[in-house]
Length: 161
Image (cartoon, rainbow, N blue to C red; front, side):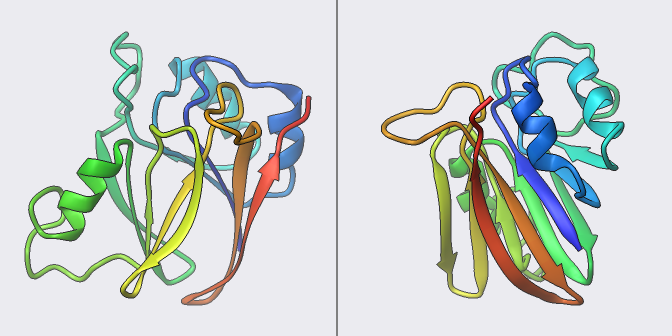
């Protein structure tokens, strides 16, 4: 399965993002979306799961939670916007209750800087931002390739248009 991961679009969906997402089977948006219209456009590419970010206060979102647990291709995925909320959840002090199984993959946004690292058995991912990168990061999203119950590859995709 090919999964597109993005965050911090802040109301902008460039042709480069759409091109980078061509062929994905599912899209995950880790917050600071910029409006329900953007999720609707992404849904024309593939099914979308999203969480709200700290800038998503306009109120036009349809049933978008602050955090979300889901399963794709046999993998447990947890997604929230802020890395501090993600860390708390992984320690059983947030959206993941103590004693619940940890996710295989945990995704956040907010920093606008791509991240890929392991914390124990959990793969932590942040796709950066395709519209407002920070530090020396380029505009980016991520592509996650999975095989049943296994991460096959993670690629940071630089957005140029």
